[in-house]
Length: 79
Image (cartoon, rainbow, N blue to C red; front, side):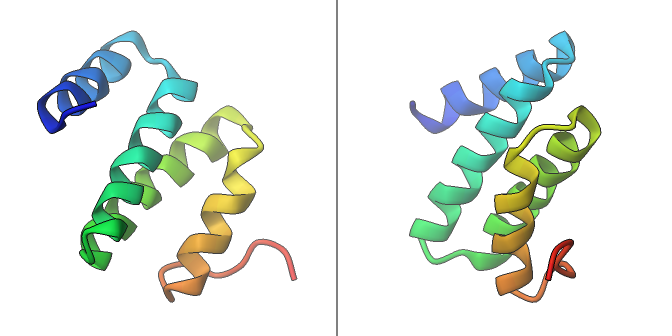
């Protein structure tokens, strides 16, 4: 998925209020930013994914929290 497609998909998921898609797409954006070495952007996207996962009660929240905590951007929810 190209960047423009990802941006469009994110906007559509917001419009549709599709939490699962938002988590998936923001995680993808975070993964890409991390792979490019842009940790600030990665954590920005992963934080969005984490919040939507928490709001929807999705299991992905645990892994997203772990990744953010590793970067010092969140407190671990679990010990």
